Image (cartoon, rainbow, N blue to C red):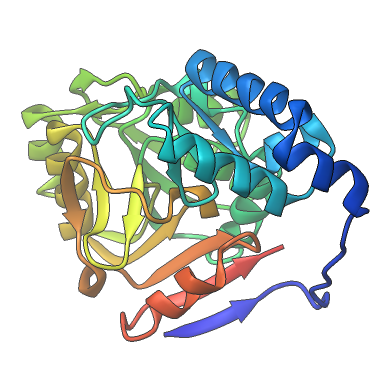
Length: 283
């Protein structure tokens, strides 16, 4: 595993006064905060630690203690970087609109870094997803690209641009809640192609189970994308780590690089060792 950091900054830790934190952990402030957390999770399906820190103005350790308590009580599921509703199981698939506003700064950093990997005159694949959607905007300035995608939204970004030296191929299929076109038609179209690079997002990334999705047809289409590509680059923010969807579509020996953000926990970075993948930390 090769880890590359694109930020020269030094990590720092800050501590908060004990008065509010200490009082909140055992008293009514904690109860009120935890009730609001449950309401947010049930309303949105998932929240991140960073979002809750901003919402309440407390430390991430306080939020993590809250999530530990709520997870133990069975009212939500604590995951890496946040929490999900108790109704969100491995087969649950959040919609595009529900995800596009989450971790937007991280997605921008990841997309900007991933875009530097693309060269003019390349044939690239771009899978559906909110991070790949962000990446597409960063690729508008790259000359003479051939882009193959199974996302109408991503195709629309390129079609709205005025460049005449670009070819965009949209494969057809059945539309998923995450706005991917998948199924036998998409898979058959991809099987005859030869791509220089592929950029894929993922519903879940796990050291043991690889890359996964809750949608079986999307998994099959992603496998066809991977088989058609010389280089596979995964673009995913840190909240995807530790999540396992219903179906694995790629194991680590099928992935060349993972581009993520600086929020990736140390444990996840350690877990990447031995995968043989380049780990790029954008920021």
